Image (cartoon, rainbow, N blue to C red; front, side, top):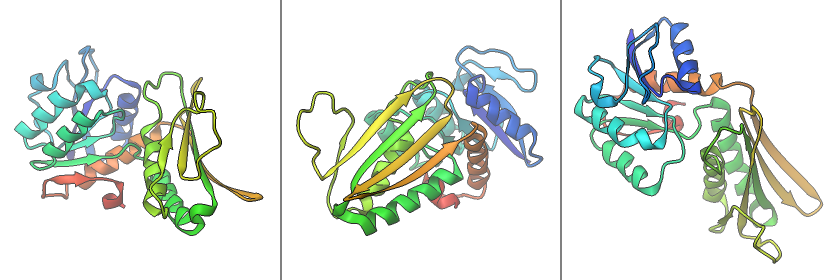
Amino acid sequence: MQKIIISGCNGHMGHVVADICAADAQVEVVAGIDILGQKNPDFPVFSSPAACEVPADAVIDFSHPSALLPLLEMCQAKALPVVLATTGYDPQQLEAISAAAQHIPVFRSANMSLGVNVLLDLVRKAAAVLGEDYDVEIVERHHHRKVDAPSGTALMIADAAASALPYQPEYIYDRQSVRKPRDPHEIGISSVRGGTIVGDHTVIFAGRDEVIELSHHAASREVFASGAVRAAKFLSSVQTPGLYDMSHLL
């Protein structure tokens, strides 16, 4: 049985990950990390990574970017593989993730959903076929508690399209201050925040007299938690340090 530590265990996603693990005979949550140190009846909870001395096989992180560096320090010190499912990292934090991946297996994805990763493949194929004749726009919608915008998934989609387009696009996040026609080499990314929307992403390929849309709708957070647990299981078979993502798992 694989032993898991959940970073951000008392957050919304932390609870869902714990529930997924409780229903899976192959994994067991042996500890949690939460900045408030709130108790959990099923496993011990520590207020910082440094305080957690419970042996484990992997860490799943659904916390906050500000918690990254102490978590990476713990994982490297204990040679613990880590699944990073948090979004909103700044460039310095991304560099820290790459540096840690030289010493331990690090699985990072802005979206752990299998469906979203299939969507990325479809976006690449569509962009390669449609090329310069279609404008690319991305609309993402999330609940009102989400603090980063655009979403990490929206940026993944934009990168997928950009990798297949015959030009280097510019990402445009705000048209309010731009008083000019749309540049054909843009990818527009729009964010909506409201209610309890789990996560919706739509990619629009708008051409002359026709529009193609590719969409993914997440009905619950369980799809992301399930993907993170699958990633932790995948890391149990990985012996080589490195940066892994959903393409390796799939």
